[in-house]
Length: 246
Image 1 (cartoon, rainbow, N blue to C red):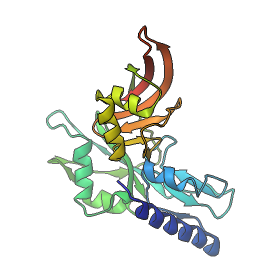
Image 2: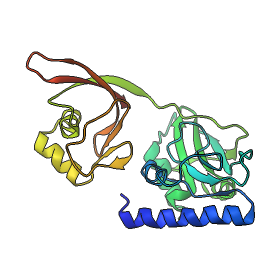
Image 3: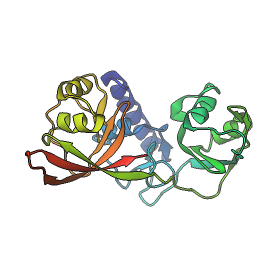
Image 4: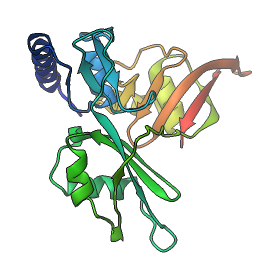
């Protein structure tokens, strides 16, 4: 979890990159930012003709801030690596891939989204980092892998399912209570501890009203997109509809 000083340092760094882009007349990219970091810095560096957020594909979760020298310039330094894998005898998961990357002693800001399909791993990174990963990311949980750079930019497909949850009110603590199967007091405590985000921003108070389309992330429970309230029950409670990431 980031604290305020981390965000302030990030903003100062982005101001420096923006100034260099203008002074040097060239495109300059940040490292990959988390969704929480993006939500914070977009208040200051709004997407425009000269500022774009790019993770390699439209719905990427981790993205870079790219300061463009010319408004007609749409260049990016992001590439996608792929490794074919055979999981018939050894299954690997997201945690295995993450651990193998971090064991190379590089920072999490050096790579973007990655995911596993039935017979392949896809990994977004910077063009400057790609040779290092191709040369050194050779084993993942005892599975031998060989990454190569793609000419295309595939998209991760995020799987969801629709769920209905009965809640006491439109307040976020009531919604967290219903989603996480907690009491209202336990939900409030989770919010106060910083375990709940709405639209990738950590909540500070439990009385926020939830709006349609909001993305709710609850540590230890999951990620949900709020679709709206569908009806009231006979005892006056509300049925809320969500898409749950699976």
